[in-house]
Image 1 (cartoon, rainbow, N blue to C red):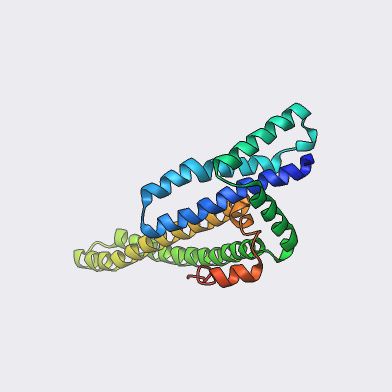
Image 2 (cartoon, rainbow, N blue to C red; image 1 turned 90 degrees about the vertical axis):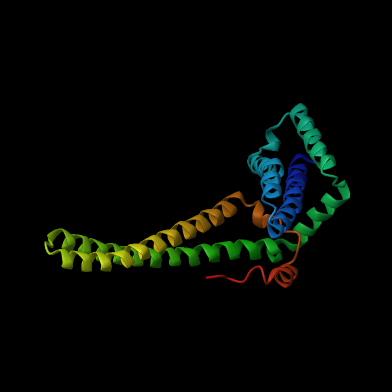
Length: 217
């Protein structure tokens, strides 16, 4: 197998492990097995995510024969370690090549991009609400400073309380939407979270995962 073809083979090995692990991770999350999620994330997903990232940057054509042979041995060890057959990897490669732009990976990539834009819009609206409440809070605080009468002070404090509660709620929403945006951006940058679906067709993926792809506001 030529060097550039073997690099594709190596990428498919990493993607296959990540796809299997991703499915296992979803099942563990459904069960609420937080310990299992943490172990799988740390022991399998994170290491193979790094391997996949390194393979994307790897210049196999510049490797010496000795370096390339060592690289091949490492990849084969990873394949055997994860009980993957050569035939399974080669079939996945052929399937990925046959599907190309009609693969499920394109669907998932578009879904991530769409959701980022949706969440950015949501974040913008949250910021608007926060700024509006912040102005209202500042006005009441300034009024409180300038008020001498105790009865009027209590009235202002009474008005301040719900404004501050709303601000706290908005802050919580902001933190959550920011976290969701960061997670989606990371998935796009890592590539593997959508490339693992490159061996299924767009139609197959939409039929299987249509419930999971429902947008939640």
